[in-house]
Amino acid sequence: MEDPIENRLKPYLIDSNDALEFKLVRKIHDLDDDSTTFKPEMSHQVFGESEQIFGYKDLKIKLYYSAGSLETYLGMTYGEKINKKICEDVEPDEVLKKISKFLAPKVHDNIDSFVKALSKDDTFEPAGELIYSFTIDDQGKTRNFEVYKADMSYKKFKEYHQHLQTFLLWYVDAASFIDIDDDQWHYFNMFERYKNEDDSVHYATIGFATIYQYYAYPTHTRPRISQVLILPPFQKMGLGSHLLRAIYREYINRDEVKDITVEDPSEDFQRLRDYVDCLNCSTLPSFSKEKLKKGFNKNMALEAAEKFKINKKQARRVYEILRLYATDMSDEKDYLEYRLDVKRRLNIPYKKGDNDIKKVEAVFKTIDKSKVNIPLQDRIKFLEKEYHNLEKEYKKVIKRLETASDC
Image (cartoon, rainbow, N blue to C red; front, top):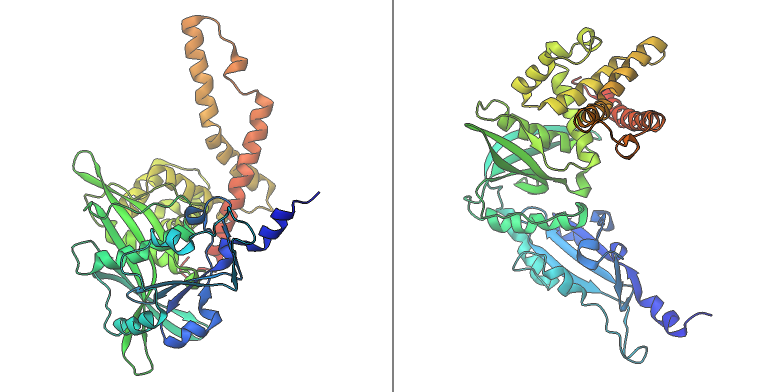
């Protein structure tokens, strides 16, 4: 039998992802234009694992940013709020309070104040050094983008970054804000440079990346890419690959840089990294089609490291993608040789385990292999599954390579 109290409360329970709406406001009329609204991918980092808000009907949470300087407005509207007549012991969630604690200081709680602050974008210019610029053709329209490298020594950059990093909450799982007082952090910020109706130049925030400079013995550094985000209105335009290229350009010609690493990459970012690394390595003599057929070798690892600061593990992955790209899958022998080559690499950890068992046997004479070793039949099944998952991912990269004009 249904609980009558639960039935009364259910209409006041709403999905927090549905309730939230974001905008990057370039013009005042964007506020009333539904096409400029975008949604979060997640909200559990603010509203809990259930991603639900209690206490309101027809709730809308408005988190708006000016496109350039990221002046921020937070407000909410609702049709009805739960009252004590329905349930005396239950209070509605303090929605704005939950969000506010993650936002930068000086957030607007009045829409008129926010509209007035939009004028700051008229004089906004990106902080830092312009290191990379490019154009794209967007349905016949040329759009201009620029990437700036900055750190906290630049005027007003701290305030800007405090606003920018809040997007991580909604789009990067397990995100955390970095220690901005640590001077080993470097910041790469992408902007669109566009002209307003009066022909004045404006800048709109597109995305960003944070890089940490690790020490590498004896006199080297190892930049590690930590956070990368292209904001939702600008995704699926190829901008992420340009941001990564800008980062590479900054580091690959520096003798002190040992290699460029990535901290716990998501599947999407690994795919992006694979794509850019494949484009780069496809220009190297050691990755020519003829040499790919002969298998991975030291020259590939060395050349990838010297030219593009790619570590050996990633160089091997790039080799496997490019070799699959060069493989005639309709040729049974060619395809079989490729699969065996990858599976031999996947089997290395198991072979190492076998060798470890033999060493223990030599010392203790006897050992229960069933407790430490995976049966051969299960190992084959696991390798086959692992291989097919890899091939599926590799083909996604290859599909993009096939449409790249510079590959």
